[in-house]
Length: 325
Ligand code: NAP
Image 1 (spheres, rainbow, N blue to C red):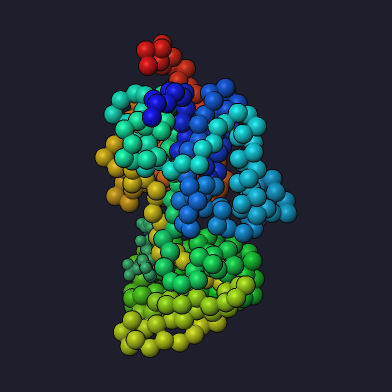
Image 2: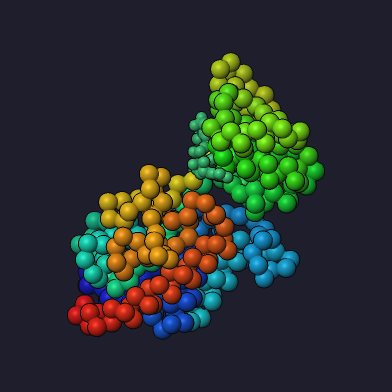
């Protein structure tokens, strides 16, 4: 295998953050290489989490909404129009100890897949899922991981939220604006969420609770029609008719390959300071890989733009030393 050409910018990830970074760096004539990931059934795939959603109505500029995969196709086409090169490879190993940075898609290979003067990490995050049969099939068809994105479609319907943390309660409270009833399904008898969020949930007449319960089955042909709930203490099961099920049991940033090299919090979200800079000079992080709070397509795209401007400035500032690379 031959040593790859050293690129000015390599971008890992092709969700809204990665592709926005690609559009900006391509227009800045930095010829970015985007390692977009490889198809899989999880959100770690080309296009990111939006590939698993249906209608998106809150992305500015699309008055009538747009399908998630269509939106990502447009991001992609726009990046390619300006000369970004996209490869369907998943980064499985990186060496950030020296520049140029090395990225492997085949962890056992000697030669890296890409060498980068500047690296943008936009590997995103994935929602933790229940792991029950048919959950993947009904994702986007009643099963959702984002109330802000999909709540609007459940006006006057009965929906459930799985989880007992702040995210679950926040999602449940948000959903009461649209849904007829919201049932919080939690595997214990006590919520993990902060007291103030708990109080709000308990005070809301639309919210009901199913304690000590887990979802053991999701049902529906084209769309979700209900779930089977199993009581973890009695072992008894029953069917709850629901047209929406929001899974809010936490997120996992896709940052494992950077462990020990990039500073991150205990959950794996990369620390960024001064815009999108990481602890390694020349490495920038954007999107959900470094955002545990907002996690929206538009905020990811915004931080992708920031990372592109940051890497462009950094390359400019270090131009003299780059000739030695
Ligand atoms: P979290 O606090 O880790 O809560 C996850 C919830 O899902 C827990 O109640 C957990 O149950 C449950 N769960 C985990 N795996 C499960 C499974 N396989 N099946 C069923 N239930 C499962 O996650 P989060 O709610 O996403 O919050 C993450 C962090 O962000 C927290 O620090 C939170 O405070 C913060 N946050 C803050 C706000 C806010 O302040 N407005 C909003 C959202 C998030 P157990 O309780 O039994 O472990």
